[in-house]
Length: 585
Image (cartoon, rainbow, N blue to C red; front, side, top):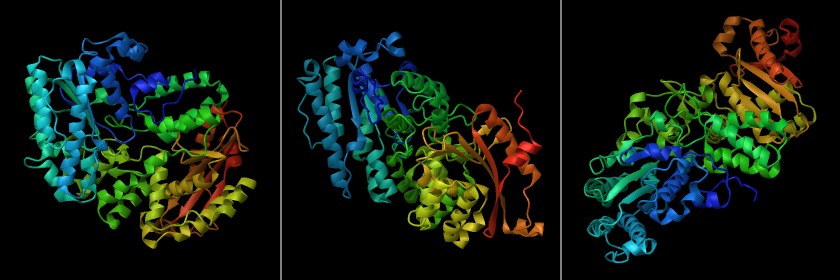
């Protein structure tokens, strides 16, 4: 049976039954058993639901006969703990609870969902729960939870392992839609949600509940519930659990080794594929900015799902589901002015300052819309990651492209109706000078005057890349800030190995002069010559590339952008070779 890429699979047993590829994270099960009431926050589409499903099958006493089937090929299968298949597992997924604009409807929906889950235990565990008291569907869920826990305690039944996936999904919608009164009623006083968590806390104190594992995205709701549930252990920023979700480079390497073998993929393509996925899906630092970055697992599976079917690097590298998350940016920043300011800052510099104290400590709803908390919210949402101890940044090309698209949307910049001719000419006769001139004429000319006050080389690089990727992804992939022994390149065009520009690699260095800086030079654009220091810089990248890809057709360019006045493109390939010859020893 051919193994499959488990894109979209959130059920652990289904993954095993369908022979899906699996990056083994089961060693974390043993570590988690030493943590009381863990809460683990990660962005959407980072594998939280699959992790919860894995825990469910590991601890569920109903699945004891399937332990070998489900876990024999895993770390925990070879090193099982005494707790495996010992509990009644009660798993909630709060993301499926319908919302409403009426607090009574919200409470009713919560009660109906939870009570349905409690009632289903009678059928899931008939030998234990058949005599459980009746569970009224519309009664408060907290009361029915008390009934269930008391019944288990009185009958000396096995303990319960509680899993709550996406604990804050339904409450986040009220935060972000500015329905403060609804959120306040849900999380304050003697609300149904606070009471529900009080019952969970009491169940832990009596021992009826063995442990409670909670996942979510933001720490806001649990902070506002603190007095009701002050027993949680936050693992989100614990370095021991940084890689519990998301893939390390070694894990990705091992996964690709197997996929290449199973699908009989030409091994000569591996370097190109490694380069693409690293630039597009890697780069997340949740705890240690100097430590090893992790890949977004779902985004990587999105790529691999297409790659294994098509047999080559797909045209579309961005999961459309990620674009929906941009609505959070607008909601968080509250006003269009704040949204434009923050998005422009990220496009122009790809960095934004943050206060590490705000990141480490939980924050509540009253702080959510405070401007100084914007970066923190975007960190938890997976749009930003740690650059260092003072700055956050966009983690990879995927996210840079999404934010560049959003920048265009916010400023009503047309990127879809006027570029066909220039792109078609480029594919027929690849000329970077002409391509950039058309970008300047058709794209830069649309920018509002206020944008130019924040201009720098990163802005031009990012928007030029985003525009090219829209039209040229059939033939090219791109690198931004690719590492070499002598530094990081600004932008690279890389011809796809299966297309007409295979082996083409163009390295581009962007340089920027503000209008004020340019005036100090006292020269005209026509008279300006490429600077030797810039030739030397890009020559180092070319040397590194030649050693990695000796068969590649390498060209090197320096592009100078002068405020909003104009630009210059220099092809320095010959100059680099002449002045700074490649060392091949």
